[in-house]
Length: 168
Ligand code: COA
Image (cartoon, rainbow, N blue to C red; front, side, top):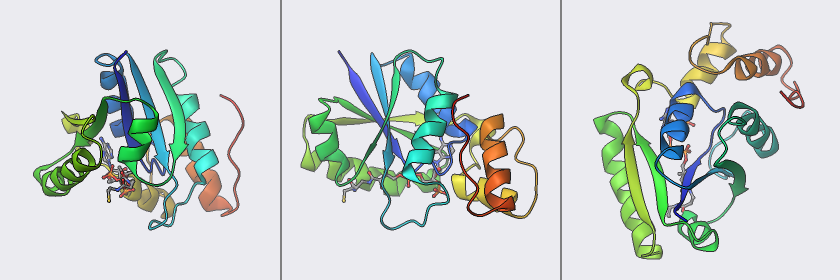
């Protein structure tokens, strides 16, 4: 069984991430979307909210599961017996950093290979921060994130303690 891990902050998940998840699910037997417990970023959504939202928006893709992790990705991949790490490349500016990450991950776990997928050009400018910024200032994020994420962003910025809806 070829297990791949798609790691990230997903704060929140966007259509750019979903595009990679969907395409990755057609290549690998199982894709584990792994939400990082960030220590360096100051996330808007809690890990529980991020994993729950990811579960909702990927519920129709059978071979995708959502988990969270902390610590080293290479170690997490070893525990999960994953052979691959999936990363999306949006622009040439992503390349240098991603090459560094792929190299260190390979050094830490030589059984894991990083696979890069070109992000759909429609989403090449997208990041979770950009989406949050637009939403924070009352702009429309339609077409950038699924409807449920749009609603959750609106709730967060209307009330900073805004809670994540349960279920679909
Ligand atoms: N579509 C839309 N946005 C995308 C995207 C895509 N296809 N691919 C990346 N992005 C966005 C992300 O949303 C993120 O936006 P943000 O910075 O506004 O939050 C940004 O691009 C950077 O993405 P990425 O490089 O994947 O960073 P991340 O914070 O989401 O995830 C980890 C980083 C989890 C992969 C990395 O920190 C990690 O592996 N950490 C574990 C510790 C470790 O092992 N470190 C390495 C050895 S020291």
